[in-house]
Length: 346
Image: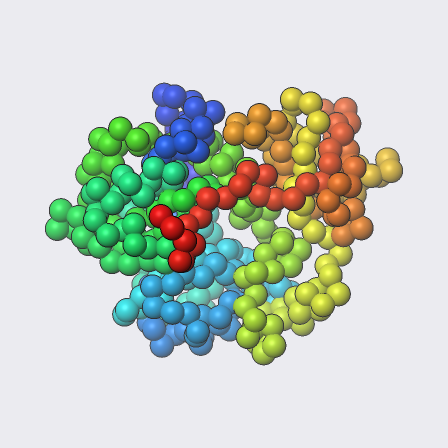
């Protein structure tokens, strides 16, 4: 157990990080992510929220999720978040380490925010997640990726979205905190489910090529540099009106000076965050996430490098304890994603 964002959280359970990672890829892993911030805004706040993020919130359908980012005036990322339009409100999920700052930022912008600090959040991820959850909560299999809905379990109201942070098909379940342990126990009673800690959560999201706030995303990095241009909705690209729009729209047109890239690391030794990326004997960038990919059997990393060195196949070196390790720029995700899109067979 470690302290994280004011919570005591598990790095791993008895099986260990690699076993938990592989179990999630093959079965279903249960994560307690109740440290994340859950906020509610009035439906009428959609236009005001748009002034803080580059996503189309006004045009969001009921039951649909949208990934976006809170931006500073320079276009840097203050936090990345999920926004869902529900029947009676806008539901936001933000990062645990930044939720207090996010709450203050939203309120300073004049938004009436309700913090659901009495709610827990569980994530069930993996190819068997849908079968397991549909046994306990019939009907969830009807959701597609980035869609959510209201359900009931044992007289407890649940908000469930088909989303997650592993690259696998899966779900996130918001529920009253005093019912979270009972629901988690019901899930863990199913043979396909095992608990998974922070260690495997990090290796799973790294294989999926998903950035982590505070590491791959910071107030100095724009969505375009981070490879998150998809989060800048079409209408917002034409209208602007979000923080840092001048810089971000210029980067969309002309390209940023640096980009987040995936790196395949030669050998068996993982490289970690903070390692220098070397080109022609000079430091050209920095590793922001790195480790061993258990499903791949090889070390992988993500780094920011000048755009001139960001093309697939570019050969680089990464510094590891005074040695230089060869690396190659590769596409992300490193491991194929398994999302169930709308209209796909289930």
